[in-house]
Image 1 (cartoon, one colour):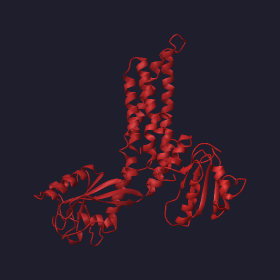
Image 2 (cartoon, rainbow, N blue to C red):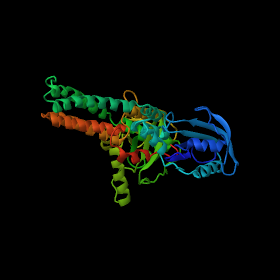
Image 3 (cartoon, rainbow, N blue to C red):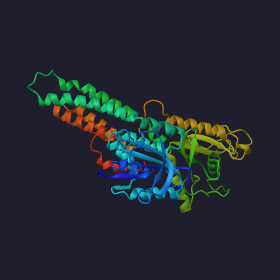
Image 4 (cartoon, rainbow, N blue to C red):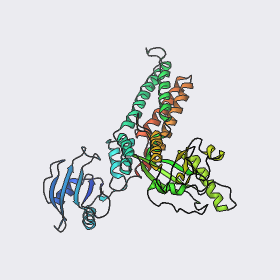
Length: 439
């Protein structure tokens, strides 16, 4: 019998559905498929075949459905792969899993194990695998587009291009060291300085992206700030189009941070309601105010409210808070005159809410625009690139060719760890642990 592990798992979410997909990968696929179909031959590769699928032990029909056969290496994982498209009832899926588990050498897949096999078999690099995870998790159109670009290999191609240039420069540096008596061109070491300097500059420019890729992946954080009873909670409810926060005329009701996730023009936004900013002797409210100020300092955008029905113009504290944020005049339906400053809104009548939503969408798009080169999406990418740039800068400071070559070698290694070309065993569990079972 064939050796090695064969893994299987549902590739569709649990629960009742019209169709469920069960994926199998490994050397036992041929044996399993023949046993389920009760046939000596195999279906035509990459063609859907309708078949009655039976329990090999009893001959009972488990279900009638479609079978897809992908011989390796022309499959997602690079191994032999079978997909069973059966009816999506829980009992049907459970029956198939029980039968598959009865084959020696077969076991249920762990989270992300199919994609991990694809990486290990050279079907994708680590950045593409992470792009696939992001695509599965994408909730907005902009997130989908970014994940598709990364899964297509655009980010990995940039890093591999830099790595190829580095390896070429390193080869010249080491040739000058290892073969001093050979008839090599003079000044080979010094000729690599412009190459290393160019790469360091390109890396710095890539890192200086205002974290747009991470923002797009995780959401642009916006915080609503202002004094008590200026309408912060009402505004959050209006933008969320649901009663996410308790609204009360009593001042100081909101004590902690309340977050809602929004989809603004295809961009993910995490909007936070905060405690009213004022001096208080109440220790709980005082802590809420501290958290509100901290959230405002961390936010990508501050939305600062003042009650234009109570005052014609915001005070100096409000203006200072909104200096690098968005000033909003609330309760315009109660104001005796139009507000002199800020974007006027009323959560009661809806006045100005459409304009505010459009403005927030514009701000989100500006911070997360997917135009131009693909952006960094994970902290490990950013750390690896920063380490690479630092190694290049150290290399440029060296007068000795051997020291320069060693720093260049470290720089190439940093890039290789991002795409998975070298020494990545310690990060594989982290990367693939984010996946669901069956992917």
